[in-house]
Image (cartoon, rainbow, N blue to C red; front, side, top):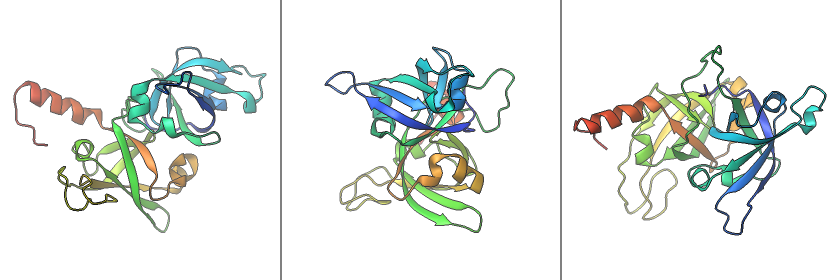
Length: 234
């Protein structure tokens, strides 16, 4: 389990596909802090995606920080649901180690199980913060609530507003869609200077895509209501 409090931003060293089908990938990230005490089999969140460490380089004090890397195997399902497959060498990624038993739950419960992606459609700078608006599919936004929690690229944030939209295709799509595109809703978050500097969210520009994990409580609530045959509105 994670909390959505990013510990460091790592740097992608490589993303390679071991076979011609490109169905899975091997990701190596320079992450001095996380690699300093990582062990094989540890769970690490990379841009909000829970990955298992398969190789560690430099997990000792004598190794220079510039050589401490973590390697992960990324499965096809993960590549399909997240942005990891689009990572390029030198890209910054948010890194968080799993929450220890005696750790503080500083953000909210984050599993590292990405539900989908959202696209940045507007970025409005404020006096000391930035307001970001994202577009997402109705199937994802149904779990997003104003003042609720959401994880974007692994960062725990509070939703400032939600604008729902029907999931049908129309003559023109909202929030960046073209003719015939599915109509999407939007949601917003506000980022303080610390978040802008300490995570890769500060680098986002309109058109950028982020990993989204909605609040797990919303998903379990819907599942329980469905199992007991209570009506769940889409």
